[in-house]
Length: 380
Image (cartoon, rainbow, N blue to C red; front, side, top):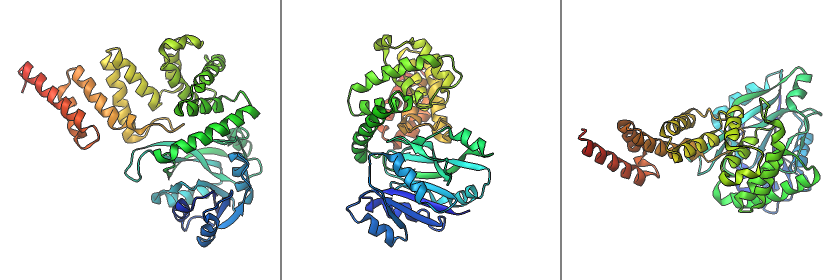
């Protein structure tokens, strides 16, 4: 079945060719929906063989995404942002996915680079980007659009499913040089979204996180509202939205301020373990707080799991996070825990492996400490 590659663009001349060419030989058509470029993006798109359509920007990413669906002509639509690209090894997997008769939406893996690709640090998350062109598949939400209805139920009603895929795209739009502008735009759109449709937990959490990343303490007040709304779900087996993992992380850091929410620290720990046992940020926080309490065994156990997650990417892929917590930061802290536990040979092996990393100075200092401990103990 045919595939329409659909890109949303505004002043994306520097990124567009990479995105389009990554789908060379895969897409049956490439459609660029331009929202008012002034840098020659439409002309470049046409030169690359794309069909260019215009869309008046209205501060609503879901409206633009729905317009992409409506301009597409093929059975399948691959939604791609201009700061994303299909990684070369997955071309055949895209074709195989489009040949499936019983799938409505494929969730694909987006690799969010926090430093320059392809060698830079990254985390991965699932995003619904390969979808069938259907009248009942539409989006809502000015920022971070969501399906208008439960997409799993929509699929089941048609005898189909929503499935995870191994297809992977790269994304470098979260590099530090781009982040501040994106955060300001997101905050503005999220506030508009919640003004029009208040009480949405997902968007409340996104707005709270965004404001706090911008240093705006209004995010704290919004998180308190989230905690009070969350109270009704405390006995549920599953969270009402996966984004609550980010809220749980915030609540678990509150310490003295936690009296303003209807949960004790112990209740939050129990709830986070029930709802999000594979959340890397929550595991990291568990390790930090265990270490601060001099509970080095539990801290090491959490860090060992984080290191494994950094190798096999088995963490929850609900949202992006700092990849250092499943990488060298986790290894460094695990080595320190091993020293505290007297596991000196294992600690030394970790620090030796970190000598080529940004933690070289800390690794050298810890290796000297290990040597001194062995000297005092009379160990070889």
